[in-house]
Amino acid sequence: MLKRLGKFLFLLIIFGAVLLALNADELCKKYIYPIKYEEYVERYSAEYNLDKYFVYAIIKTESGFDSTAVSDVGARGLMQLMEDAFEWVKYRMDDDRDVEYGDMFDPKYNIEYGTYLISLLYDEYGDEETALAAYFMGRGKVNEWLSDTNYSDDGITLKEIPSSAARHYVNKVMTAYRGYTNLYENNS
Image 1: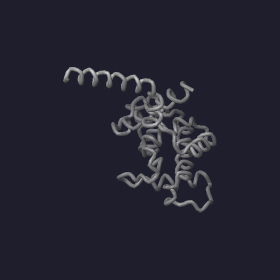
Image 2 (image 1 turned 90 degrees about the vertical axis):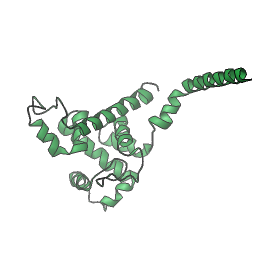
Image 3 (image 1 turned 180 degrees about the horizontal axis):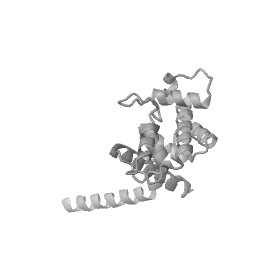
């Protein structure tokens, strides 16, 4: 009896593994690299000239697609905007709409402002990793690193991100970005 039960369990495990392998892409799309808030991500990534999968990777890393997320330091929403970043983006957008920091829980506004912010940083720094470091640590800190020859040879490109937290964040977003790109773009 135990021998038959063992064989049954073995076959069940093999069958489950085969099913998982056959549905791996679908499982990854649903649980590891989901696509949510597509209308806003597609709209604002196109408007601000960013790869939509880059924006999805930031949202996944920042909030796990939880529009009500609040960080330990008070960052809000899907792309985890701080109030000072919100105010700076609102000013840079010359946005005279009645949008307030409290609206950062609304996916439409959060994705619009967050995508605009990362596009400004990308335009300023010229590469995703430095832009992400500035998104995470702030422009002032990244500019400080760029002026230090220990971290930048040319004052434009970081040869190393000195903060382990920022380095971890950048690696996490870039890993998610590669995951989204490989799963959705390269397997279409």
